[in-house]
Image 1 (tube, rainbow over the protein chains, first blue to last red):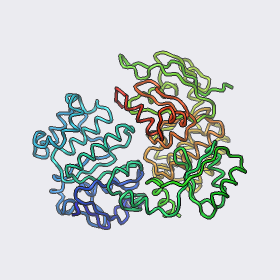
Image 2 (image 1 turned 135 degrees about the vertical axis):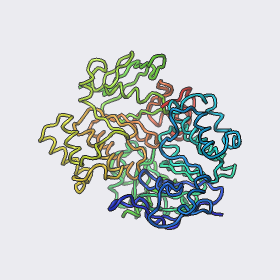
Image 3 (image 1 turned 90 degrees about the vertical axis):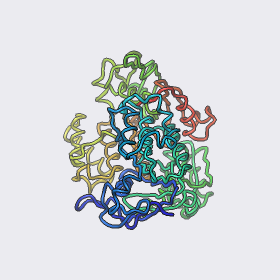
Image 4 (image 1 turned 120 degrees about the vertical axis):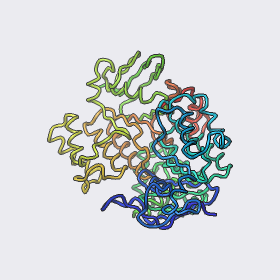
Length: 305
Length: 247
């Protein structure tokens, strides 16, 4: 069953501006953990604002929980949880006061749905009398998640919950989402970090207002055409320059410790001989499986050319 | 000319009882790409502020571009460049106006401004954007422009505070091409990032935990030391032990 649907949604902010969304369509199944993966300015927040009925699309239709985002906006608002990109709780209320406030707003109590937030709330409960403005990034994020969950929403919208949060807190946050998923909540989450795509069941890769690809992370990776290689040598910046000057190589870019590259026409032997001729030492060239970032780069560069 | 871009011994900053930066020591060579990592609240920003001459250390000593952080703050500011994800350029000035403004602040003559400005525009391939407001450019372009402007006065060191946050993967790599090119010209790069693949692009990396530097080495040596296959694992192993968390 589809809990969230978008049909041909387009949106432009102001006349003559670049469109924020161009003909976007996708759907999210009930109980699914769905990721919108893309950089700043891709249109992720605009999608969230349309789905949470805070913004009207110029064209297209969308539904949440079977309800139309325009006609039934009132009912949608009480059945979804939304954590916007910018921290938007009351800085001068304490943890406990914020949570009680949001529960009351939705006509419920913290006790009524405590089961749902228990595991997350426990981690910040020792500081419940501290004002939200005085919390660390990781704690603010946990409180915001509790507030978005306190009325037991059918669908949870999380707009870049892990941006600006360090690698340790990011990992913990994704563990929390997996646990929430176990409880049957549909989750739509966005992130600019490609490595987080793996934690979602299905993902949409989005750039400049258009969806580049939608599928499971595995299927997107398996759809990568051709063979990807990892390459390294003693001096990486020089290596990158030289490889880009070798005609038989298609794309080549830095990817952590190695360079990632594909052949257009050349062979492994030719490239190795070429690089040795350029004086490179300790060369390693090996076949590898692409990750989501490789797929994203390929989609970006092929659609732009 | 001093061969070390940064020399830092026992640098400490206290705010009341809180020790934000706790006795850190390290050197950065001229032309090196130095990654300055740490979890939120580990003390990175406080340390960087001291090195940029924006805040006095409580104790310890440090020299940046050969200038003392206690006595020569103004000389430090003239010899470094700085850019961050948050503060970079003026959105309501055009590309050309921003270049003029920053070049002027850094004391470039009109002739230098013209030469450097043209060179920068060509290098970035922004000939058609010169008269556009910076606010109308995509984030990736802004960040590339901000970096080029931050080194327009040929500083000995440039401090980059999360320069690629939220930028798409292709532009992120173009940004690192610019960093490599600057390092080749001898500019020292001091960079913070939350992207662990970018940590691999650095010559050496330090990782701060609770105000201390708990690890400092090349990416390859750190991975070996922590028996890890990626920098992500190294970072996780260290940062997980942190006792404090703050912004």
